[in-house]
Length: 506
Image (cartoon, rainbow, N blue to C red; front, side, top):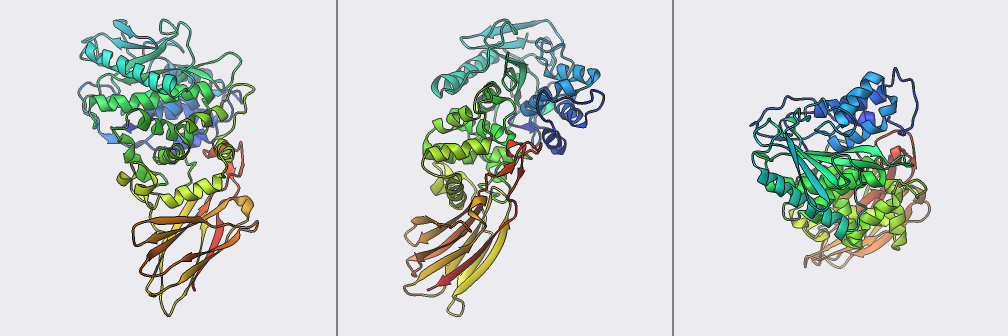
């Protein structure tokens, strides 16, 4: 889900559940499974936490992910007690009660006075106007929703080439993709998509349906822009569920938020999340699934697609394809292999991405509107101080950048020496030279197997304004399958790697 509104809901329970879910076929004592119970309680908190009343004005707030919470619930269905399983199936049911059982949650329609409007690929189901709180005021909005969903389908499947959501047979009437309208505002939801039935012979691929708000009245963006970005984001989750429903969560949300830019570029709603991701907070690991960090890291995929083309993200999803017999790589593994196939390394790409976040206006096509990464420290050469030393430690997939100015006039060079961690731990160092004419030159420091290296750059004043040194821990090493919320549900092997820097004015 792209947002949660109205009130405050902690993600601690959701992350805890995600970190201990295991595989969908995992077996345990059916009378006691704390992780499965946590997944159920998280979904209940999202979908059953508020009474529905028409006319409540939605107020944006920050919180949980309904689509992925329901995906986590699907993962643990066979680990729940019979009573819990019934509760889970009610949450997973479509609003009209079809699919996984009889709906008994706040999204349930509770009426048979319904209708459906269909086009080539999508059917929109709705309560007849005037029946209850879930009914749209005007059938014209149903048509608008159908038109928008067909346009999203055309963009993401026909034009961009992603695998369509898996057909659901006759559930919902026929095999076309089903969207349901409900009064989600009082629950704090713009929309969500739910995985529903596993495909025959598969353990990771599921059919899906979506639920969208029935009018988006009172939402901060206004009705139509809210529909646009929500449809693009949530439909991409339905696409993801037909690749791998249980893929790394940070990437699922980051690429769905990136997809908003592909479909509704003019809305720019995803810019509000940038301040939570690495473009603004480089000290939080890239593969974090917590708070709004994963939404904000859509800019990582914006940079990837800017450098290698829009198809780059689709190729990544092909590498992460969970079809039985497919390679089924994890998020970081797929990124590493994708970049290697394009003649570079994850370390180099990540280092340049981190350095570029200091100047987003130059790094991204729309970056003038993005917040910049902060400095971790600032130093200055003086006539009495021509050697600067500092050191730091970095978590996995984080970076820090340091600024160096000079008060020493004349023609000089600066030698930047790095004493970093071993090359196998993925260090990357980028030195950026800021010239007085406004241009920037970036140099990747070549490090040896021990993580040591140096580079000499021009630092003649007044031609050069300053240097920056970006240190990055671009480690791709994990002990996977440890039920964490990081990539491959793994424990990062290279947290806290140390970098020592010596800068000399020659």
